[in-house]
Image: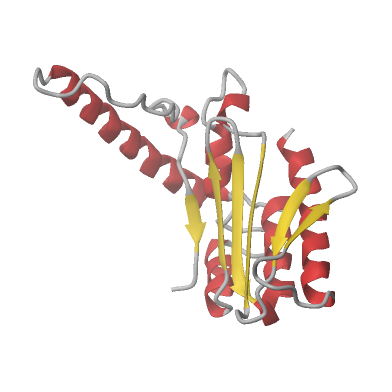
Length: 200
């Protein structure tokens, strides 16, 4: 499911890249509707006064689609996609983004998986290459994976402790918004939240 959606998103992003690179600049208020061969739809707004390309995409592949025995899979994926891809390990991938002032990030919510990319227009080709690499060839190296799981488990435990303290406090408000499920405190089932790599 996720792999199919990622492939479709890449095709749509390639179309957007071609339009931004070849079409006549539009006014900032003009919205172009772009539809990929797979039926995905995007809205494109061009502003010739800004040399920046910003893309945000989403599809139905959030945590509610996780396998029953592996809660947190979508969010774990979101955190790991920028921790190395292809022949680039985590440090090299992060350095490549930073040296080229590229911001790349992914988030997983209950019903949707989000991705975002921001880059200077002259560097859009390389930015999309790195995005494609992250989506198609993530490395999932053991060291960053284990580190991410440890960080997430610690965060989950802190959240659980906060909920327990609020529940035990008779003066706390009783109409708080429900806490979004983020996986269990088991390392195997841990679910990280949003993750974004950006230029330092």
